[in-house]
Length: 238
Picture (cartoon, rainbow, N blue to C red):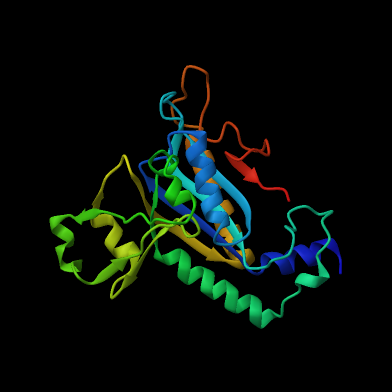
């Protein structure tokens, strides 16, 4: 199989996602914790946190882009990385895994802030759980009693919303402690090669818009560190 055909098959089972975090990450440590939390869900091929255009005190925006893959193969982003024959899966298995990942991602509603749990030894050792304490805005009171939110653990750090309503419906009405938690809202979900193309189109639109927005005194705009292979943004190499 050619490299192009192998990569096309690999990305057929990709999941492209964009999230909005409230508040935005405020440090590289928070960004790294966010990446590691996503890697607990599935292999991550691409990860990017948009950088703030104007504020040196708050270097990141609320926007996070992630590309997951349902395959356990080494990332085929690297054209020289051959697939592992011991990790082969059937199309039916990959489709099932992709469906399970989509269902999981749709339940994500929050994450503890790294500064809140970094010195909690019991949490890091998996001996304690963190609940997502919150209130509903008056406009969202009709959702009261209609859902549950899981507790965060070191092995499953994301808060997941389940019940008679979806996370995307409830989360806009949630008030939470900004010092302790990020509220997370999925803003885009796509699958396969078509999902990747739609994701790239949205990134290109954002870049085009940023060219017409004010820059800071250093002349920087959104994405000034893209393409350097770091964890702020870019494809992750094996």
